[in-house]
Length: 326
Ligand code: SF4
Image (tube, rainbow, N blue to C red; front, side, top):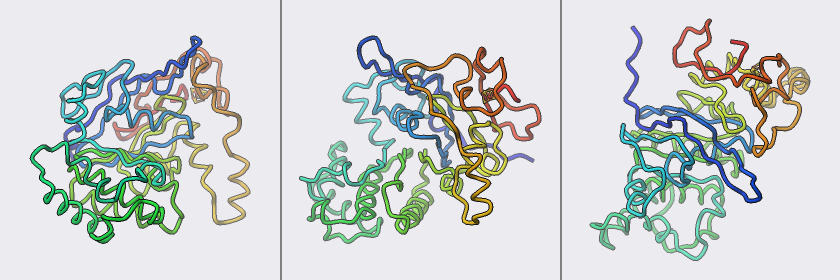
């Protein structure tokens, strides 16, 4: 008997975010994306730089206005453009952990001020409460309470990311967008931060959108993986299925682009690396956006835009691919 999925926490419906950069030029950063994230689920979002992953994450939690489409939170449609009171409400239920722990922390504020800043949105929180909660969160992320009087430059990259995690989670959010939280860190520290997020996810019952360009890392932490290319989702499904049986030609090349420790398979892998450049998001091609790089391109691909659908041979209904091959 199949398991009943948990209720949907966050849902994007036809979510679109364009940026007008002047002179009649429009950047199609996120184009008509529909995605559901269930309670306590980790959805990995992967794709090359410039595919629109961070913009989608920010639009989901209200850090970007939406051009069209909608975002629902527990079934309630959020405003297209946020008013100050909408930001305050949304900050209590959804937070973001940023990629760069160096630039995302204000160098003029102490760690205590940085972590405790968001609590001001909760009007009932007094100064003593803030201090106690900051001390508690410093412990929970593996730092010391007396670190609250120090400044960000006194910490290593991994410690700064822990401060960023404490700043986001002290608000008690249900939904957290982790925007490449480990890519700026040394390899030796990456696993520590992943383990910390995993522990906090379990103890707090968090729901996460985990953005990364490394599909092999996302596989370890995610229940499902969504693959994004030039502003659109091209494949989504259970993490192991997407990684071990990728269907979309872009996902297949993305999986093949992970370095192999064995030199023989590494040689074979290099011959299948993704060729060509990702097209400009200002001049989005007609039909399939991956057509200029796809080894299986057909005439129909340049004329008809493929939409996400369950492939005919698929055994699970939560696997979808946007490709004319299926
Ligand atoms: Fe390749 Fe065509 Fe599929 Fe696009 S729709 S990925 S061009 S086969």
